Length: 560
Image (cartoon, rainbow, N blue to C red; front, side, top):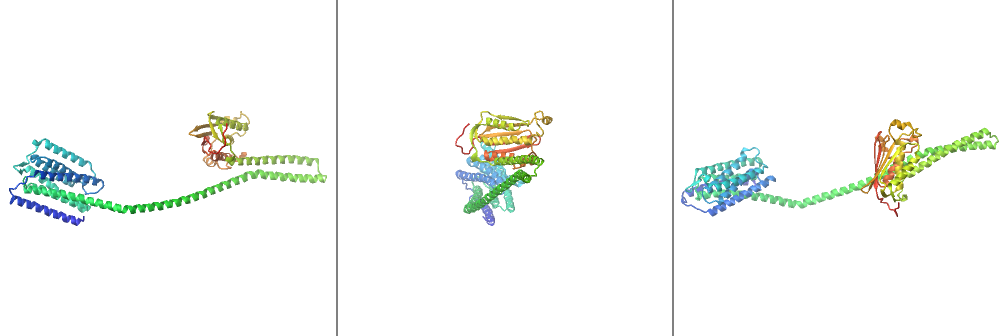
């Protein structure tokens, strides 16, 4: 409803209320002065109607407060309506008499005072949902006390005429209604809320009815006149409910009309986002494939370069040795043919040839060893036999074999494993892993340089026994192998490169740097497991290896 129309209705209502007021007083004091219309049933119906409207409106205003709808003073108006509605309900059910007038006067007094209450508070009762409950409880209590103890009620009517007590109660309540009406008009100017104007009109009608009360007598025309004004006030409340209902319906209709378009827009947005995600996923997959290929090529290039570098040295020495030997043979052959070969020259040749052959043999053996190591880097699942075996028996055999190769090194291996633990896996692969771990510890973790017997003083000076501990257990269908040594440990830089091919800290001792790389490949590719490294300087190194109890690769049979 437009604001100007609402203001016009307010002024028309004020004019109509004044007309009803004046007309009822004139007619009741002249033409119909002696006429009395005693209709308790009609009166009770009007009061119960007003009481129901007031209580329902109060409940609705509380709901509107939660959703920030309605007026600027929902809780204050709700409290006033609760007090009026509750006491008017008691007023409607009692017979005509002192209680009858007392309950109506209290309803007017409490309603007017509560309507005006927000005039004296800075923030009002906004979002105070306890206040309506307190007012309702207090109103019920006052109504019950009034019915239970009628003797304590002051005289409110005498010979059909209202007493000063009754008149003052209504006058004070009416003044409260007028104050509230002007306050709501000021609030409307600030907030431009049209519902504030509607309730200012509601307060004006209640105020006019309260003032008209003291000019009336029980059941006369003026008495029915202010009841008409109160009925008009409740009808204004009904108009408020209707207008709010129309606004809500309009919002619902608008929401429904836009819902389909909103759904379409969001569907299109989702389809567009999904399309973009699919494109991004395709690009990411392609990029990932490229990165994997680049990584493979980089690894292959690094491996090839490492192989070429490692083999180049023994091959180069072998070529140089064979060339030197060939030149000496040619020289001796010429001397022999020329009959100039002396015994001393022949003896020198034999000695040189023996040394050259020894050097050539050692370098060829070195090359053969390198090739053998390179073959271990490659994991070939098709050539690996999968079988069922007891883990501890397998580990004991591996440890014994490696220890036999390092009789010069004094270290001790502790093996913790259940003797009955049986798995289905690749014992050869496990053997490569354990043997390379032990070899790495002997070559890098422990300092055995110069040690030739068990009485070597180097370890004794360190006051620490070279110790390797292998713990193997089975948890949740996973084999958990923990390999630990108490050697010199690794730096952070060494830990980052430990699994790289050809990385070694002991190249001067002839180490190639493939041991850790072989271990990594055998665990990841051979056993389809995982490996984690932990190491601290001067405290040792630990490898945590996990793989499945049951190998997933195809095998025709399993045997112990």
